[in-house]
Amino acid sequence: MATFEAQVEGLTSLSIDGSSAPTQTELTQFLTDGAKEILTVLPKNKKAMYTTSSALDNSTTYLTLGGSEVLGVMRDDGTINQPCRRIASTLSGRAQDSAEMIYGTSTDPVWWVVNNILSIFPEPGSSGATVQTLAYPAVAYGDSSITKFPDEAEYLVPIYASVKAIQNALGAKAGNSDITTALGALKQSITNAGTEIGLAKTEAAEIAAYTDTASGSNLETAADGIATAVAKFQADGGDPALFGDETQYKTGDGLTRVNTALDVAISYINGNYPNAAYDLAANLADVDSDLTSEDIELASGRIKQAQTTLSAVQAEINIAQAHIADWNAAVNALQSEISGFSSEVSSRAALVSTKVQAVQSYAGTANAYLSQASGNAAEIQSRLSVLTTEYTWLEKQQAKLQADYDKGLQMVAGA
Image (tube, rainbow, N blue to C red):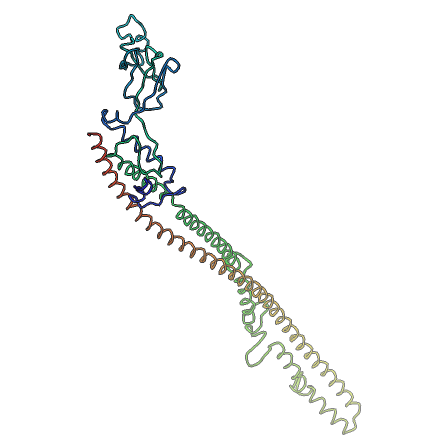
């Protein structure tokens, strides 16, 4: 005959060993508990077939029951075994008082139980007494039969153990270590992704600080500075005023103030200024005429006038050069301002680019963690699906086995 372990495995489809759910040690306990429950429901006449006798005498006057069911107590009166009468433990004192009606005698002895200890009065003498208790067998997983047990009920023991084994297995599945591990990995992946996203948010906030107008000195402010400086080249009445102000520059004429000074210089040369008879060209013509007529004194006077006019021309040219220098200074100032803002823009743009790369890196890492989390979730779902199928089958099998056991136990109890 197959061992009880093999029978239980056949009924439950469980594989049982020293570290399974249940273990072989737990299965042994289930088998032993089942045998005890079955013996307990047997009719009393049936129980008498599976008793154990314990002898008492004048050296051992009481018996520790250990939870065993007492089926009979007899005391030898020196001639025959007299059946002992059970009394309530509260009457044990009266049973030992000869004046009481329930007084125990050698031909009508009594027994009672207090704190799991069976006592007899009169105490067993040299002839002794016998206590019959129901023997509860210890059933090991490797056994294939049970001694001192009804053969017709033995099949119920592995069924009982199978029900308990399935309960144990169901409990173990509720704490599936593989799912717990996958769930832990899922939580960690999500936590890691959250950390990376937080780092990306920090970098993004710094990017905003470099580009947002509300933050003061930033990329947009610097870019606006370039635009403002460039606009000054065209601004009418700006400081400095350049192309946009006709007092400085006039389309078609060029630099206004320079042209004005040069026009004055030209008028001194051949522009009838200060009058038609005294511009530089007129004076030189007079000098030529005077020299031809050998009027040296008059020629000398004309030459002095010409020199004075040349000085005036030079003064106007100097004024024109001063205006050009002033123009160049204004242009250089604006160019310097633009260059400074351009450097700021370049610097902040490079920093923003670095920050953007950092955000992309953190986002990429976060996506990798989220991908891991997705894999963990899929694993959990797959394992739950398998576990649910197994759990449902075990529940149905347990219900069937429980019904078989209850039916068989009822038959044994009514035998």
